[in-house]
Image 1 (cartoon, rainbow, N blue to C red):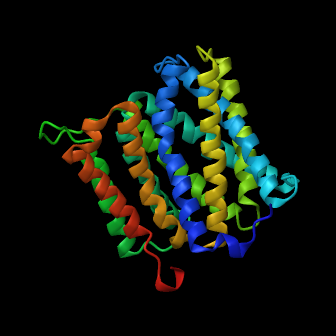
Image 2 (image 1 turned 30 degrees about the horizontal axis):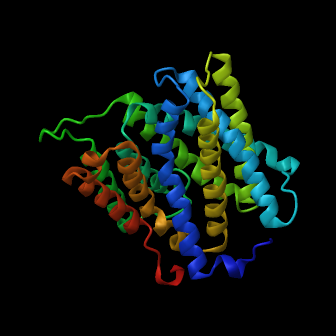
Length: 313
């Protein structure tokens, strides 16, 4: 089932796969929060949160390697020169990013997590342009970032009409730190993917990062309270979220202009907010005026920063 460049550039394929990837990513936060209850994980016990993430990403890495092998028509194996790159990505993209993400998910609502995590687009642009000089920070991108960050500030403002921010370090603060780790992993992956298979890098860094997190979690007393049929299905689903979404997104970015694919990132927080309302019962927060305006601002910011030049569309 070897994919070719022409297939991956068809409009229907790009739209369908990009929306699928963002639907999967958007479902992660509410499903993780459901998992805390289903697996009886104490949300204030960080080693257990890390163990939960570690098991998920170890399985996700195995699935990503299998998926990449099927798509490429041969077993996906890293070269010796790729090992150091896999190690760097494992620390940035899995260990650091998802340690903060899982802690944040345990202490913030699904709606807030879905909106705040979307700032990875804006943080990624700032880091990519200001620190690594991988792209130019244009006025349009700056305006998009400001619009997006305004949405994040709004969703965290007191609903009583005051100007006090309702944020906690363990909740929204950790989600913001997670987006910073993602931004660094994004520019690193972008650099490495010029000479490496992005699906291979994602798969093996998930395996390594997942094993490191599992070891740390177990070493400090982490445990999954109940692992039954529903719990296993949830772990498999979360593993598929990472394996499928990252693999699909990496392939789309490889064969298409960045602006053509990235523009669909606006749907990620939309799916996250809708699924949080549906699965977690957070309808008041999701569909209140403050939540809807904040979501609109974040989505608008993502659309603005990803508007490509005419030749890239």
